[in-house]
Amino acid sequence: MAKKDIKWGELGFGYVKTDYRFVANFKDGKWDEGELITDENIVINECAGVLQYAQTCFEGLKAYTTEDGKIVCFRPDLNAQRMAESCERLKMPVFPVDKFVEAVEKVVAANKDFVPPYGSGATLYLRPYMFGSNAVIGVKPATEYQFRIFATPVGPYFKGGVKPLTLRISDLDRAAPMGTGHIKAGLNYAMSLYNIVDAHEQGFDENMYVDSATRTYIEETGGANIILVTKDKKVVTPKSNTILPSITRRSLMVVAKDYLGLEVEERPVKVSELGNFAECGLCGTAAVISPVGKVVDHGKEICFPAGMTEMGPVTKKLYDTLTGIQMGRLESPEGWIKVIE
Ligand SMILES: *Cc1c(COP(=O)(O)O)cnc(C)c1O
Image (tube, rainbow, N blue to C red; front, side, top):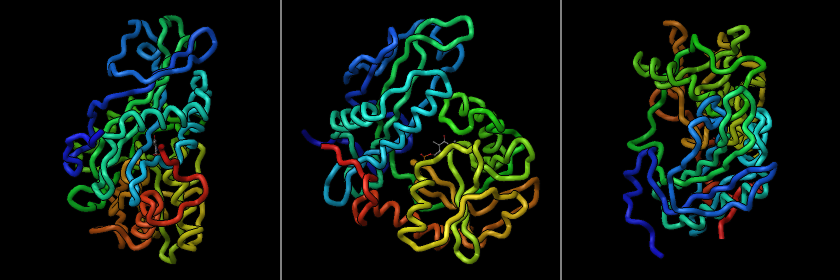
């Protein structure tokens, strides 16, 4: 088989249909074996739990080609684990971690002609998700669920170079103190749409959310965690139990400590101390790290000296080292790279 005739470098971040997707069904208290299918459409009851009460959660990870030509995924077991936690919080049945990883492997292997070549900057984005599929009209958990993974090739994130982002401190909230901010629920995104569209209309790239109880501490943006670098090169990430535990951020903290020998710290970070930091970046699967140049706090501009026009030096090192590990140019910590046979 040959690679698909796709202009990898010109791909954006949009849905492109691939050949196979994985589907498993939960019914009568158990999961079936699951299988790869070709039909990209789903037919469910008009009263399905997902349609009425948003009982759904998802994950996101990438498959890509390493320097020596292997097709790999980055830490899929952590996506499986995180989805299990999302499911528990939403009263959905957990899809077993080992079966999740196997299903990821199956989807990638079946769509290997869609895995972009090394050096293209493009990747095959994988979207595992689950939803309540049977009719539910009284508010309660569904009794039947579907777990799916589809794949879609996506283009390089930093097309035409790195452009540092401008964020605003948000007046709306993403996560309540004892709410669902720490899980990857579709509902967290539905209610963030109003605010992101508004941010874009006002000329900002993203919203920086603060803790909704005291509006004192920074948390994250709508879809990425925050990493900060002090003037003496300590890598700091906000600590809060309403932040979604980004796999990229957790990996970058290991890279900072073990590969770059930097001091790392996870602690509450006040909005008022943002001005003391030298660099700021957003991290997530899509971009790994995007540099933040500026945060606007109700008209007051906080500029990061190192990141206004390009990635700051520590951000760049973190980015180069993690992508080096992912692409097989640097030795990876045990278990981080899953080779797809
Ligand atoms: C998915 C997500 C992230 C990024 O997590 P990764 O595992 O690094 O991709 C960050 N914040 C939110 C709210 C998310 O949903």
